[in-house]
Amino acid sequence: MIDPLVILFGLASIQGLTLLTSALTLSSPLILAALGGLCSERSGVVNIGLEGKMLGAACAAGIVGQLSGNPVLAVLAGIGVGTALSLLHALLTQTFRMDHIISGMGINALAVGGTSLIAKTLSNQLSGRMASFPIFIYWVAAWTAVVGIWWYLKSTRGGLRLNAVGNDPDKARQMGVNPVHVRLFALLWTGIFCGLGGTLIVTNAGSFSDEMTAGRGYIALAALILGGWRPIPTLLACLAFGFFEAINLQMQGQSFFGQTIPREFWQSLPYLVTLVALAGFLGKNKPPSGLGRP
Figure 1 (tube, rainbow, N blue to C red):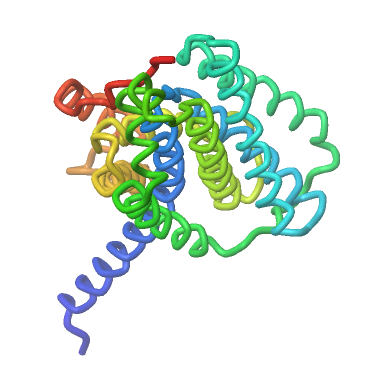
Figure 2: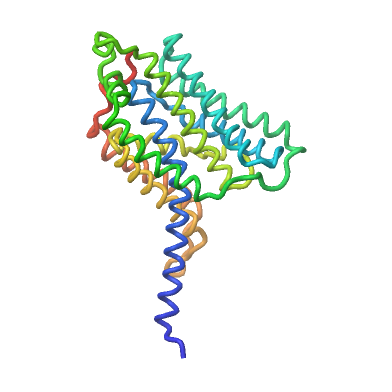
């Protein structure tokens, strides 16, 4: 006879493993996007356009992955579009001196409209799942990138220059460092990380759909703020947000004491947690002092 406690323990273990796997999957694009934001904002460039960069990358990776059947081309397309949008942000903010927030919001709007138009135009040619790499490869990339960025900022000359430009661009110029060159390099990496994050989102879904990033770029930016613009704390914030998103997926349709909680509550949970966290920590973590300065 099988002990009921053993059955309950086994079911709880399976549910816990499913929740953990889901949390890792959902937090990985947040980690990648937040690292992209960290590179940008540590150099002094405000980057509210993470959402648009991820959405553009997701669209490109999904369409190329379906049309070509080649996962390598899908990843390259995602990184390419993410990088192109990031370099556009560099052009607008560093060459034309546009306000960073306006530039970022413009990129978000461009990505929403552009990806919707492209997806509808090619809808008759797209069917089935896109060709893609296994999800765990993106997990490894995200966690490796955290360690790499932490080491780069702490132990390399490039990291010191990045911090110097982000904290005081005028003094950096006096020391012979060109802030525009440093920021261009930082935004290049922002595009790569956002490209990978968007590619992961569409890989997990199997195909592209309108606005499928669903605010994850903004959540990644919130995680960056909560992490104090530091890699390891930002990683932990992303994991927390991914965990609540996993709870949202797992608890929809579940009943408590005979009452079914509306699915809209669980869908709003990650965003509610984001607002509460920002309300509690905003102002306590100081951004780079040169953020937004020319």
